[in-house]
Amino acid sequence: GNSVTQMEGPVTLSEEAFLTINCTYTATGYPSLFWYVQYPGEGLQLLLKATKADDKGSNKGFEATYRKETTSFHLEKGSVQVSDSAVYFCALIDDYKLSFGAGTTVTVRA
Amino acid sequence: KAGVTQTPRYLIKTRGQQVTLSCSPISGHRSVSWYQQTPGQGLQFLFEYFSETQRNKGNFPGRFSGRQFSNSRSEMNVSTLELGDSALYLCASSGGGRTEAFFGQGTRLTVV
Image (cartoon, rainbow over all chains, first blue to last red; front, side, top):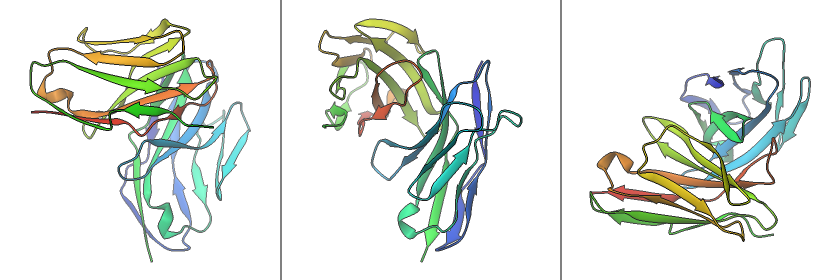
């Protein structure tokens, strides 16, 4: 079946540091890929998406590129802020169902 | 445009009781899906509905059920509650297919 594997956290960074969260997937075919973010006490917010190979999704300074060759969709941000502290989930959709990674907790210190 | 609305936000129930959770999707969205989030198991898919038809179902016992109404609003029901059903239940709506899903704030269910 389809699955998503994320790098384990937690990740602690200083403000303005570079953030990378690794995500790889296993799927039949070429599903759409997503990154969601969850702030404490809230639901999931869509951060960015990519629907086909080599697509780059971007939003709020975050970027991720759909890499078919390496079955990866790594999330990056060049300069994080304290407000980026949250849990990040990589996901794919197939057969009307989202499959999520375990989530990576990111804490950014001032 | 209003987002996905889930009610209630918090719920405390006793073992053996049943509970119904409600979800109103974004206007125009016909697909509604439900997920359970727990610290141990993460985010797990419960079921998905499109135009009142269940198109996919996750690996949960029959105590978990759902339905969708003609206005796309959806409910999920859990009967004979167990302590392990304590979780954040998230509803998501989308236009269907491979498009992105938008989530509500969730219902926090605590079973005591």
